[in-house]
Length: 365
Image 1 (cartoon, rainbow, N blue to C red):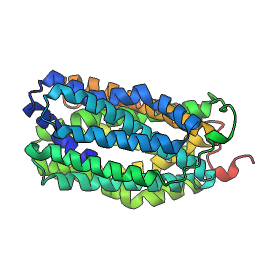
Image 2: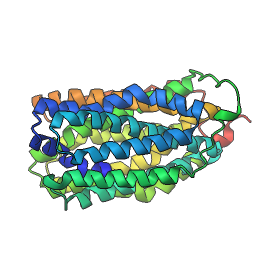
Image 3: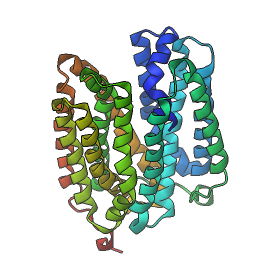
Image 4: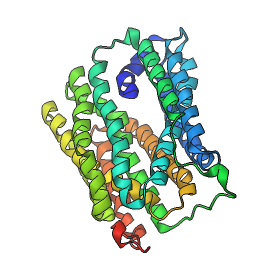
């Protein structure tokens, strides 16, 4: 919620602090750069030191970094804040999902992951609507509120049992570079490409169609609501249906919708088409997350999640950077290019996952 509450107005806030377009681009991209550089390292640390200290530390760091946006500083100083936020957000996601994979048996992980996603989506759905009451002038105090919420979450996380056993045993098991893991990383990259285009070009596309600020905010909310409602169904499918089929169908679904948005010139229609797209995402994301950890040792979950997050964030950052340039050539170009590349990457999982049991009940004991 904190991200979607303040993020849409953050470039304008930085502009008011004297940031040029180049400085604003640097600050916004620093979030993803930090994630790429730290997610695997912090995933390894969570396997070695335990998930709880990494999660608590990440929440504290995110909270403190968020509060710095209220300080009377010039825009360039906030590059450091975004770097810390990016590293902390990545660390939290890695530890949360690796904890789920450690605490729940394979036959229940899809449903457990879907609950984590439902909580995130609830915040994403609420944030843009609540943000309608926020102005650029008081955005710093919005980030203070985000920081307080993060520190409160850190106090809760300090009391959680996250399945840590790192301090009770010897050397860490090695991460096996199997076709199953490689397929999951390819799936992460395919998803990162689509998200990167949305990060860079979605608002620009809607603005080119003369969308109002409210319509742009509602597009985030209406995308999130169906996913939130169907998240439990997506988790159930991941645990009871063929995960490989659901994952591939979801990735191709995302690529298809990505390719058609530039050709829709009615903003109301775009809002409801986005809601349809989210149905496929709700079904496929828990399946992809479950395939990543299927058959893995519980003390390598952090590194697996770190590799997955790094692959996704790197693809996202590249797509976001390239898409802005392509959009200036043609609004449809970044959407079409990323859709084709994402669909091709998704198709390779037919090879990578060919020997992976799609149904967990079919897996060898």
